[in-house]
Image (cartoon, rainbow, N blue to C red; front, side, top):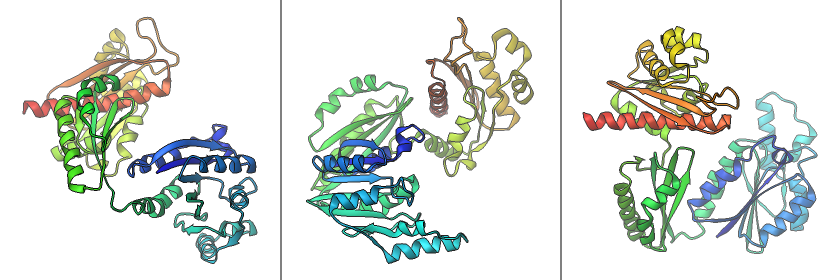
Length: 417
């Protein structure tokens, strides 16, 4: 099956908001081996919507559209779709009651314009939206499926999970699809591909290998597709075992996860706690940890000692260290990590210090110079990084590599036990 994803909204085209819907939808479709032929962002105009729907129908079987379902004048998706399909809009009684209930529960006066949220295409199957006032709509025409969803991410995700994905699962019930994922770190994508090229060459047509990289980690995803469930599961498991053995020095997890929940799980298993001391990352490290449910079992808290004074006051970094080596140095990073560990009585602590940019660099320490230290039960690991001039990218790279360094320390400690 071929699919096209269309996001509608002027706010996307002017950079006011970032389109996260398309990436999330594409990731879900991957589970069903749906091929994405195109992703498009278009303005809230009748001409753009009509033309894009026509073009999408010429190359895709499934067209997913998000955005433009609101009640304001600039939301023209429903009216344009009605013209495109040669139908009309009708007011759905069940949706109207749902919208009415929402306004009453919030003690809000419902305006005439809000009634339009219950208007749906006469030829559609209504996809009820429990999380908002705009319902989704499924239209089947000329052996194509058009699915209209609101642009609000959490509403779109609800409709995808409740209505769209179950629909895809029914398309070919005899076809079994399985996925296995390996999370690796500390190796670049091109080096990784070179390392496993012979294994990849052995893959049969029924199994595909995808590289899903981030700034510091790579997910390897094996996807198998067959009408013989036991056979394809066995084959995928075999190739996963080969990859795990070949990449054993880089493997972080042998299941689909990201570094944060995996670290939390491992620290919880050991009954250990973690604190952070962030200078150049400004709290993003702690934020990424606490974004994971259950992080309170291992994460005690963190500091953002941006100034030298706070490094001394909160973490007991020595003044002579700062004078002799500077805030961006291995010595300062070590004292920050050990100071955090001691001050808050944690078994582990991560410290980051660096010049994120775009200014502040020198010939000796240019922009992108970063030091990370991780204090463990018996030792402290440190690593220097030299990134580029992009501040936000430098912060994100530092955050990810700091977590990777913590993982390496955990592995090292386990190997010496």
